[in-house]
Amino acid sequence: MELFVTEKVFNRKLNGKAIRIKGYDTDGEKWDGVYLVKETRFDQIVVTSRTGNEHFIYIEEFETGELLTLLVLEGN
Image 1 (cartoon, rainbow, N blue to C red):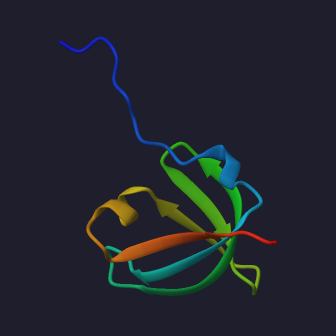
Image 2: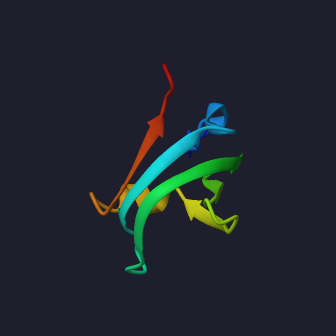
């Protein structure tokens, strides 16, 4: 029996960052845009689109192959 389990979680430093998400999620929905990370919740992030709509994305969406990619946008 394992005493400790390491779980994958989103980095809290993503909060407030602009990210680009591109590809298809596990439901087949197309993602191709820039979003603002509103909040990280362990294995889930809450992002806001330019139109103000909130979306919830689980870490599994990025681990199911190369269907969905996330890029953190950094300014100069």
